[in-house]
Image (cartoon, rainbow, N blue to C red):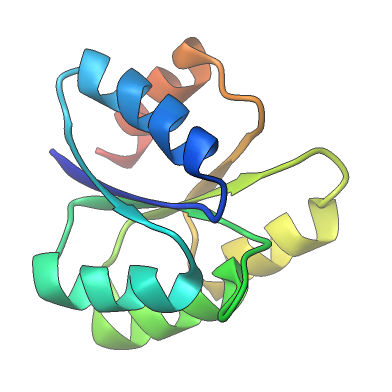
Length: 116
């Protein structure tokens, strides 16, 4: 599975990417929402993990833009603790699930199983 990881923090993209690769997946990285939308259009990944708070275009707006491109896009939100309202808004916008930072490999595996 090709997974696009969108997060403005490089260490978070690397951390999640390492977990995904360990689980047998290919990864792409995006450093903000606009970058994520462009990479989605170019690569049509099987899944997107999307941080909420990013510069240029936040994750909520990026979810809406990706869903305009592909209403069937599979998107999982990634958030820090305390962003419950934003996570709910993201799910209403079309995200399938969410993962709380810091990542736990078991939770990542669970989400991947759920969205497949």
